[in-house]
Structures are given as structure tokens and as C-alpha cells.
Amino acid sequence: MNELRVAVDVGSRFHQVAIGDGSGRLLDEFQIDHGRAGFEQFFERITRHKASDIRVAMEGYNGWARPLDQQVLAHGWRLYNVNNLKLARYKEIFPAPSKSDAIDTRRMLELFAFDSQRPLGRDVLQEVTVSTSAQRQLKYLTRRRRQWVAERATRLTRLRVDLLSVCPDLLALTKAVDNRWFLRLLTCRDRLTALPRLHANSLASIRGVGAKTLPRIRAWQKIATFGANIDLADTDIVADAAVILALDEQIKALEARIDTLARDCPMATRLRSLPGFGATGTAELSGEIGALQRFGTEASLAVYLGMAPLDHSSGLNHRSKRPKCVNSRCQAALMTCIVRHMACVPESRAYYDRKRAQGKRHNQAVRALGRHLVRVIWRMLNDERDYEIRSESSEQDLKI
Image (cartoon, rainbow, N blue to C red; front, side, top):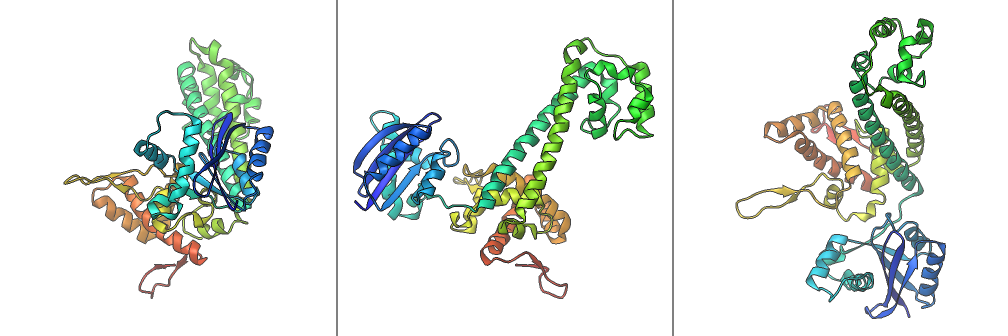
């Protein structure tokens, strides 16, 4: 047997597997555990068919499927990611008499028949292309950084609310609750109620507390009062401030690792040549985009980056909608880079202002500019050229 098709319905603890031949005939189906023994069973039952062309389709590539998906690629087999939206539509058009994981895997096997049909049908199964080692590491590190930043924001919000409820005068000492000297002040003792008893020498030894800040703290100590709930939040406020300081250090160290790793990633260094595109943003874009071969055209890349809303018009109603295949991390990173890009390139700022004058909201105008920048990025990456700015005598100020 030359051709073998495998479908995997992925779960958090178990995976349902169906094996068929090139014509779609079912050969075998079984369930495996998400663990070493289950993975060994998976590869043993596939290799016993002794096929030369093995293609595996699974739901949730890079999600619950890890690390099975990486092991499939390591075996040299072709891996396909199932488009869940199109699979759901397919099951609506050709419904099964019942719903089970085994039936779902048989439906997934049938999707391989679309591989030689129209392009719209071929998109039901999207072949996974292997990213470089640097891109995989950047993807992991930038996602970890985004998690830590979100956790830091949550802690800061809770810290501010707690201070407002038990000691608003203390919070009034600083304009921003995440000031480093203020966080160090909160954590210099194990309880918040110990701060009014600190001596001047102890306050002056806190890094960041200077000649302007020290008198304000001393004035607060004389009138310090605490709310009724201070017995509940006394140590929790100090603990939250300590976690925020620790997260700051972790994020700083992680950004240094990302910056070092991005220097060895050709896509990240090329994107870095765009004015306003910083180290963290380009690293996140490179890690999430992966292999450029995933995208057939720059339009598909624009949709993935969230810079191309889809037309959703009917009759006299002209509307647009957000695509469901947008990578939200890419979109957030690119939006930030575009805003900084406008500050560096007058022509981009003029285009943004023109869109705003047409009545578009801020995010709409930024995405409109981002749509043009995606064309630039596509050409840069395909032609392996950095961003260039022409001389003033040129017909255009910007070129690829």
C-alpha cells in the first residue's frame, strides 16, 4: 500500500484515530491515551500498514495535540491542520445519524478527497509547514511574555483597588501605582500598617525615594489612617506588590532573551528594518507567522494578521466583519508597531489622518494603514530585502 490517510480527533485526555487508504476506505480505528504509551500505539498501528505516503490530519494543531503533532513531523509524515469551521459546515451538509468521536474521524478522512479539488475545498485541510527553530522559540517566549504582562496588569488593578479601599492617602503619593519606588515602599515591611512607623533613614535607603519623595512620605506618616478592612488586606497588598516587582524582573529578563534570539531569526531582523517596529513586536510577529509558505498570497497573510476585514454586504447594506481565522496575538503586536511606525514616517501619518478625516475610527484607520504595510512586508520577506527609504529626489519617498 502506497497511500495512507490518518485522521485524529484530539481531546485533552484521549484521541480518536481513524486510518484509511488513498480512496477513503476505512482500514482501522482506535483510541489512544495522551501519553507515551498511547503515542507508541499510534505510530505502531500506522507503520504496520507499510505505506510510503502517510498524511495525518488532526484538529487543534499546536493545542491539545502537542506533543503528538511534533512527533508526526519528526517521523517525516505530512501533517494537516483541520479547519474546524469548514469541518462543521461539511458535517451540516452531510450529517451523520449520530455524533461520536469515531464518526468525526471518519468525516475527517473524507476531507482528504478535497485535496485535489477546487482551491476553496483544499483549504479544508491546511498542510503544516515547519518553522525554524528560532521562530518556534520566539513563539513560545513571546506567548509567555504576553501571559506575564496580562498577569501583571491584573495584579496592578487589584492593588490599586485595595489601596483605594483601605488607604487612599497612601495611593495619592504617586501618580502611577506601578512606580518602582512606590512598590519598593510597600514591600519594605511584611505589613502595610508598619509603614507609618518607618524612620527617615529606613525610607531614604529605599531605592528610588529621593529628596522630593521623602518629605511627602513623612507628611503622610503623620496622618496615616487605614480603613476597616485593613486586617484583611494588610499582608495581601504587600504580597501583590512583591509579585509585581518579581514579574517586572522576569519580563525584563525574558525580553532580553527574546532580543538575543531575534537577532538569529532572518524574518525578525528583516521586519526590524521597518521604522517603528521594535524588538518585541517583530519577534512576536515572526514567531506567530512561522513559515511564509503557509500563505498563498499577501491577502491571506493580511487576513491572518487581522488587517483585512471581510466584506459582509447584502443588497443596499454594505458592511464588513472580522474574520474568524485572525491571530489575535499577531494583530495586537502589529497594531502597536503601526502606531509607532506612524510617528517615524510622515507619509504613513498623513495616510492615517486622511482616513480619520473620512470618518473612520482610530482602529479602522490603523488597520487601513496596516493593510498597505502587509503588502510591503510580503514583498520584503519574499524578495529577502530590508525596508528602504529613497532619497528626496526620488519620485516616491518609500520603496521596497
